[in-house]
Image (spheres, rainbow, N blue to C red):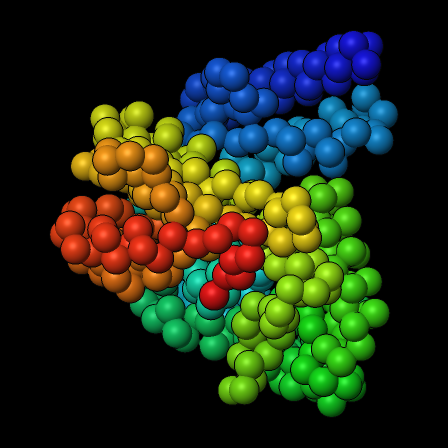
Length: 394
């Protein structure tokens, strides 16, 4: 066991050294610095500071020869740091724009302003819809500054991207296969091919899988396949399942009740939320440290009930503290008058709406605690303490 851990440590150190050497050699990189206590590197390029976790790069290169890995690392960071040469007019770009699905954590996280500078939509929890431009020598994400440069609206850019996606939806090129989650026409065609509502998985960028909701064995298999690919692929998107609502829009897929399949489906969504909130917390901690902000970041904690395997996500709310709380099933309330008690978080927000303020530019969702409830509301909350042995989330 110690030898394996030692080998893993050496492998990480070798990759870190290689990444540092490549970054130092690139013309647009001004500084390079390891992130203390993390397998990550920070660097300043084109006037912006960026921090990158290297776990995905390690996974992507683990089966390569040293020569292949060196080549891959250099190509990766060269493409990442090289300023893209953009066309002068929207007419030259319109037919080269495509929508892509990415996790909420994807993209630059140097600051909150930079993280929200990409053109995006947030139609589904923990996912982002971004726009990419296929340029002659590279692929570049679309930023709001590009829209201003070409004098077009966000709506016009997305309309062009979806029109382009519809043209390639039936091609054999799987680069945009996960983007089919966003194509209304393609999704409508799925509904006619399966029994029950279509159940959809996009575990990686190049995977779109669907089955019918009436076939429980297939849905179970889809849960297992989505989680396996999500945990093993460096370009993972989501282990959760999705479906179409009554209006034909994509929505999270959940099953009523507390049978084994319902728990499996819930676990996929909870697992995705856990990863995204952990990565978001890393970014927020770095931003707060840089800005001198003293705000407590409440964890998103995931537990599996011993008796039946039901997944429960909870967070913590402490009296008289400025906190940012994630969206969870439960909240543990510490009112400084005895032991904390646990209630449904959606219920807490309904009973004390004046105490929570949605932070508009954070994705995934977080709520700032801006007040403490009146004593009578605290008593209402205490009276609504849940039985953890039988609780089922809303």
